[in-house]
Length: 112
Image (cartoon, rainbow, N blue to C red; front, top):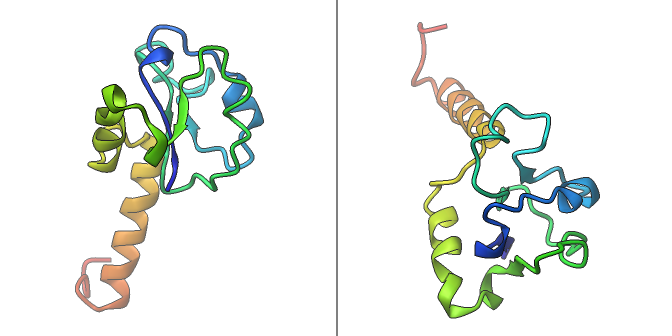
């Protein structure tokens, strides 16, 4: 299970968690174009290594293990699980993996 950033982060977007994350899985960072428009920060569950480094540095206590989310914030785990908040970086990575799989199986033969 990955960590999830819940409602207390909305409008705050403190990036202390981004700075301590060894897996670079919390987005958007201040240097990403999506930072200004994002309501909150999100954890890419595919790349989260569940180290917990982000939890103690969050000034609003918004980060929980998915299975420990308070009931009122369970929707944050569901929305992330459905891929609704997948970062652009993660989306590109998944697309590349899918294309490589299609190439290796011969499905895209002649398309490249």
